[in-house]
Amino acid sequence: MSGKIIANGRGVAVGLALLCLSAASAAQAQVNVTTYHYDNYRTGWNQNETTLTQSNVVEATFGLLQTVTLDDQVDAQPLIVSGLTINGSQHNVVYVATESNSVYALDASSGAVLVKTNLGNPVSYTNLPGQCNNNGPNVGIDSTPVIDLSNGIIYVVAFTWEKNTAVYRVHALSLTTLADTVTPVVVSASATLTNGSVYTFNAGVNRQRPGLLLANNTVYAGFGSFCDIAANLSRGWVLGWQAGTLTPLASNKLNDKRPKSPDNFFLSSVWMSGYGLAANAAGSIYFVTGNSDYSGTTYNHITNIAESAVTMSPDLSTVQSLFTPGNHVGLDQEDGDFGSGGLMLLPPGGGKFPDVGAALGKDGNLYLLDTDNLHKEFGSYQVGSCWCGPSYYQGSDGVGRIVTSGNSTVGVWKLADKHKPSLSVYKQWGGVANGQFPGFFTSVSSNGTNAGTAVIWAVGRPTNNDPADIDLYAVNPDTGQPLFSEVAGQWPNTGGDSNTVPVVANGLVYVASDQMLTIFGPGGSKTAALPKIRHTDMRVALAMGEHDVYGVVTSIKGSMIVIRTRDGKELRIDATDAMRAFRFAEPSVNHALEARGNYDKSAVLQADIVLHAKDHPVMWPADR
Image (cartoon, rainbow, N blue to C red; front, side):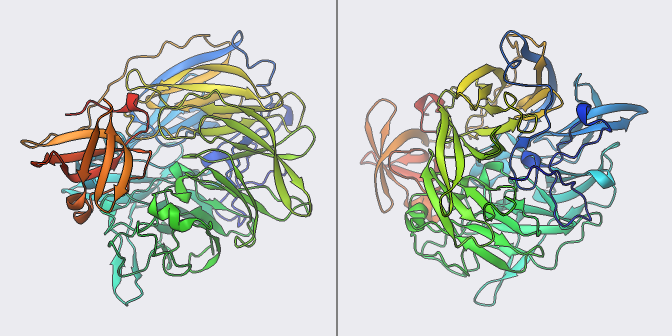
């Protein structure tokens, strides 16, 4: 596998930002992290970490250095630029964007605020479809921005509430001042459906969650839904804007172009738990879609590319290839999104392998795919259910490895070539705390392929509602043994998954969470004492006689759902009204839901809304 470093920039068709080096001395090179998961392949691998190793990332010598207070929840991954002059002084800078639409430029060592800007009032959860609670109390900057280092710009998509209307804007901000370099552009789009009618982008029902992509002199963004509510209106999109000018591309990708479906339920969202859209050396764009109509009958490889890994042309005019799992009907029927995780491209193998990609979703099947032709599948491997995404690195033997994070287990899979690319289990470690949906995010640091330098970093998800801590883990991939773990932040809005990606650069580790950024490194505290933060009750006010209940689904027959409540009792729910109003996130047996409504004379809950809930009862708010 090639370890070549290729710079990212507006004029580079490759679009690969694989840890650009900014220092003259290779021995003391400073790393820049300008995009989600380090590069446009989304490997999550910093192969130029010369400080942190398996021998010094230990409890006795490594720990918390700084805690930085922020104004809201952070769903975006932090980004880093080294050796930047701001306010007359040179700094290594970490950029953090919050759900209050604030962008911070912080000193990467001290955490001091160098510059801060706010891009407008965020959208309150009370103004989301069905008052979706799969997020914090605000939705503002939800996705990871992307940095154009050669032109000194950070691209950000902000979600704002203006005159009782939700609006998305794409901003091109100066890295040094965080001022707009050009007039921000309101996100708009339209596409022709198969009956000739025109479907228009609706910001109020489309969530911009996946990390932004800069490739082909273009900024790309994917859109999904809010809690699968308003699924009669929400459809997955991929849109693009020319870098520098923010001129929209002439073409865009609407994933479901059907004018009708059996339940008038569309989606085919691009959400990927925040994982970034990817690009290969030729500039093709890669993403994965989620579920569509729960009848399971609407998939079509041209008109509705649900539950699919997709390759698009750089101008978004053409689907070049796609891969759809054979069980896609069941995935749609059970809300089993393939698109709960992203698609990672492995670095080109120099002729040893075809170009390979890896993708997995809720059902836990990791698919190894030919990224030159996604129709070609090399194999699948069960790694555990995943609201997450994989990472990649090369071991000291020069062989590539894929890091998975299904359920609560870090898995290291060694790449082999037995007539075709294949994987074998190398090491596994099952100690990551997680009380939300299964899976978590990893990254890898190493000093090239030098022995003893590779470290896998992971951030778990909270296991309770209060204090709702999240933990940072370091794991030795050669032994499968933990090196370090410590509380790294808090995530009190447990209805929305913590999709936190640990960022490692220049001897430091960054974890962004709710209202804080923590910085870890050598010489830090062995025990983190984090400040107490807010815990917002995001439950809506109930109408007279209305109830709000949680439980695990035991059976579904049409609109009739039976759940087992927290006290072990059986409760029948009639979801007819919720389905009719498109306030219905498709439930599945053995998984939890939340339902609101009124009891009839037969003690059946007539639900006007049905939402997904975390499977662990300890994560449920009290019934009302």
